[in-house]
Amino acid sequence: MNAEAESMDIQDTLEYCQEKNLNEWIIPWEITEKVEKIIMIMQLLDACFVHTFKEDNTLADALANQVVESQGTEMYMDFQELPANMKRNVYMDKAQVPTS
Image (cartoon, rainbow, N blue to C red; front, side, top):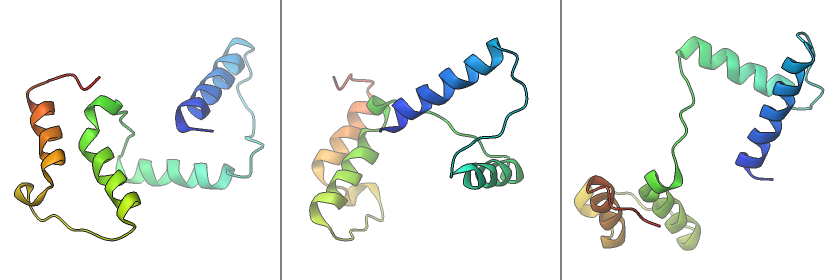
């Protein structure tokens, strides 16, 4: 299951609990401790999640795809070292050109 589907399931469940006034409940999942630790660390760091639409994330997507395809490690120390297709993604994003 992908993250979008999982987040929708969580949202639906929380909305159901809100509608039924179910204020206190324990998450019955095996991941409860991990989720609680994530929340605690995020609070300590004053961190938050920010959703980035795929269209705004083309460079990161291209980099991730390259790692998967090459199955190796590559390092780019500055913008000029990026492959041409990745630079194009950045230029298109800066120009606000739609990718789809």
